[in-house]
Amino acid sequence: MRLKHSTQACLSNHVWRVSSSPGCGLCCSIGDLQKRKALSQPRFARTSCKCTAASALVQDGWPLWAALSACAAGGQVLEQRTSFGAALSAPLLSLLLALLLSAAGILPTANPVYDMIWTYIMPLGAALYLLESDLRQLLNAASSTFGAFIIGAAGSVAGTVVAWQILGPRLGPDGWKVASALCASYIGGSVNFAAVSQSLGLAPGPLLAASMAADNIAMAVYLTAIMVIPAENVVATATPQNHDCTALDRPDLDSKAMQPPGHACVETTTPSTTEDTTITSGASTRAAVPAAPSVESISLALAFGIAACGLGQFLAGAVGLPSINLAAMAVVASLFASVGSSVTARTDATAATPFKGAETLGGAAMLLFFATIGAGVGSLTALRSTGWLTAFIAIQLGVHMAVIILGGFGLARLPMQVVLTASNANIGGPATAAAMAAARGWPHMVRPAMLTGSFGYAVGTAIGCAVSQWLRVL
Image (tube, rainbow, N blue to C red; front, side, top):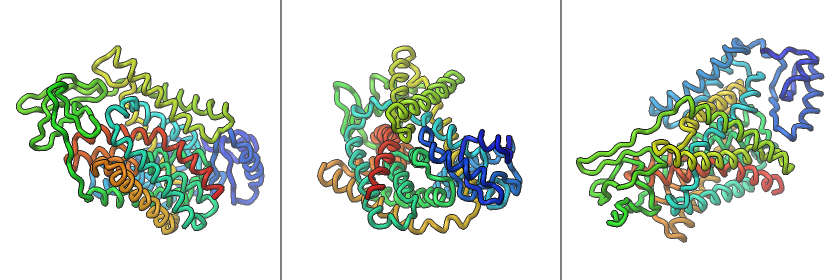
């Protein structure tokens, strides 16, 4: 339903606006009041917002939802089916597609639908991302990679502080918010970038879109660089006692069918109940059919994802820190995931989690969110401001790489493949880290990559919010 320009509509609207159109003082005054009161649930200002978007071809209702969904789907399809898309990533492509439609006058630059996505869809997507990750396995199955990941996270924080000291003033008055969101992204992923942006009240607009563009481009360059860094392939042979492929992190290779040539690992005797399994050894093959998402699992995921968002907001308000509601949500969602996996393991040996399909659903929701960022920009000229952001990110990633290599490889004496996998999980997330491990012939690193990357999703938002308080006083 289109927001009408009336006293009742302005009072009932859930977000505050700053309008540049004449005769809009009511929206502005109410907006300022809501801005001061927006402590229990952060809202967002659109600096170029108008109370109506009559100039846009698609203004509201199902056509607007369809256009945003098409941008989100288009980004994912391009990433999966083209090399160009794979280099840019689905979030960036979704943003750019919506930006093009907005610049062409098809999508409005401001709409209550965008605010709904920011306030409800994005937090729910972040919660869904975490429901399929049982982090209880982390210390047992990925101890070395986890250690390197912690060093890398410290490097991301250090890189943010160093970059802020050098270039912070160049980013403008909201620069500390952008820097904090980028820090969270380089511990977890884009989902944490979005969550910190929302928590800190970073307004959708040119700065946020430019940050997303610079982030994705710099990440692609960084991940390409670490793909070519030489690293030994350290894989221990199986022991007669457990018939398991023990590597640096003692991962269960039961979870993957990939084996490097000449590897002494043989078929394991006990299948893992925490991973979908396919094991090949010589002529014998044993495959566990992965459980497909069902109406039950999707329904449970939605119910517990929404509950995690609600509980996170309640807990943040209870301790007097409403801005950490998404960080609290991440903790609650992770607890739901662990409890759910534990209960399922006792009742259904064929399923690893009761929330199968939650991560996929969360990914789709996040792409919708990134599309709204692009739509809110309205002009391609907004991307011109990526210059200082690119330099800022270059410093961040440079310090991160120095810290994780010197600390992990040099001081802790961890193998380079562990260090690179952890760094990829920091900067790119679990999917890119697992893909690199598989591509470089490190099948024993796939599961640690997924686990540490998922841990980054769980803690990245909280660390990003904490760093924001630090940057404000520097």
